[in-house]
Length: 285
Length: 135
Image 1 (cartoon, each protein chain N blue to C red):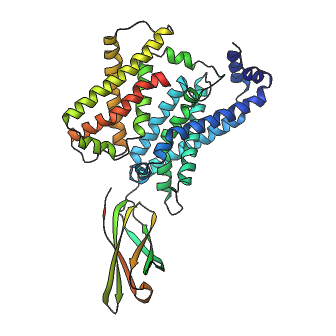
Image 2 (cartoon, rainbow over the protein chains, first blue to last red; image 1 turned 120 degrees about the vertical axis):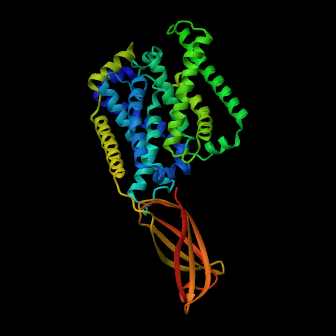
C-alpha cells in the first residue's frame, strides 16, 4: 500500500521515505557499534593510534561502504551515483551517531584537544557507518525492492569474498582493540591453537554450507560437493579472515613489540570471531 | 510488481533535496577527517611535557584534597603518569603524596587530586611528574 501512495504523492513521500531510511540507518549504526562505543580501549585509540593508521582505516571504509551499498545499503540503489550518495549518508550517520554517543558517555570533554576528539570519533565512525549500511538487510527494507537481492544471490566468487571481508572486518572490529585478544593468545598452548583453528574452520563451513544450500534451493547455484565448497570457500575464506585479523590488530596497535609466533597466535584468536562474521555475512546480509 | 514500479518512480522523481544535503555534509565530514589526519601525519612531534596547576584545596575525609590540573603540552601521549607532591615549610619537606594518571594525551588536560594530612594552603606545595609509560 505504501508503495502505491509513493507513486501518487511522489514529492512528499520522497522526503518521508528518506526520513525513515535515515532513522533506520542511525538505529542500525548505533545497534552495531554500541559495544565498541562503550569500550575504553577504543576511546584510547583516539590518541594512541597513529595518524597514518587512522587515515588508512578511514580510506579502507570507503570501498567497503560502496560495495555494501551495491549489495545492500539502507535504501534501494540503481546507479553508481546512488551508491556514492548512500555511502556519504552512511558516513554522515556513523560519524554523527558516534560523536553524539561518545559525548553522552562523557568520553568527549572540553579540555581535550581537537586531535584527540576527532581521532576518537573518526575511529568509531568507520564501524558505525558500516553498521548504518547494514540497515536494510538486517532491519528490513520492507517495500523497497531494488536490484540488491538479485545481485547478492548471483554474486560472483569475488562478490562472495567481498562479503567475507566485510563480515570479518566488522566482527573483528568489535573485539580487536581489547586487551583480551593478546591475553587469550598468551593463555593458549599450541594444542589450544590447533583446536581453535579446527573449530573456526568447522563453524565457517557450517555457515557457508547453509548459504550454499539456500542458494541452491532458490535456483541461484548449481549443486556443489562438500569438498569443493570447503576448498573454494572455507579455506580461501579462512585465509582472507586471517589477513583481515592481522590488519585489524595492526590498526589498533595490538601487535606492537610482539614476536612473530605470538603475533600469529593473536591473529588466530581474532580469526575466530572474524571467521564467524566472514562466513555468516552471506547468510545474514 | 507494484513495488518495482514504486522504486523506479522513486528513482526519477523522489530523491529529495534533503538527501543530497545530508550526503553533502557526509562528504564534508569525510574530507575533513581525511584532510585533518593527513595534516597530522606531517606534524613534528615534541615529547610529552607537563604543566601542573593546583586548582584548589578542599577539606575532605579528615584530610586535605589538592585538586590538580595537568596539561600535556607535548605531541606524544603519556600513560601511567606518576606525580609527586611535596609540602614544604621553611625549606623542609613536611609531607609527600603521589597521584597516578592513566592517560594524559598530547595537547590535552586531565584532572587529578592528591591527599594530604596537613593543610597545603598554609605551606608551599611542589608537584612534579616523576615518570610515565610511552604507549
